[in-house]
Length: 103
Image (cartoon, rainbow, N blue to C red):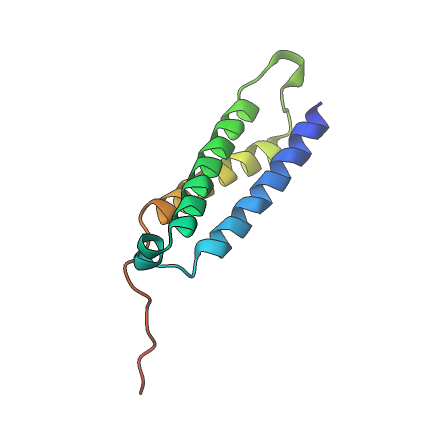
């Protein structure tokens, strides 16, 4: 059971990076004009919150199923902190794209 929890959490954590990469090219007006993209963004925010709840579930000891590896504990804590930044990126998107200045 511990192995299943570990592997499933790692897969979900790597999927979080993919979601962040997917939404990195969009700005505020893209979300306002495209309703399906805005719905995807809302689903991604819900996914990030559920992954954070899953992380809290992993960190709280549950009798026999407690994760005793210190390395995995720090990995889970790192992913939780990283997801907070990813959530803030999706909740407040950029207003404009940064343009390169011509010399």
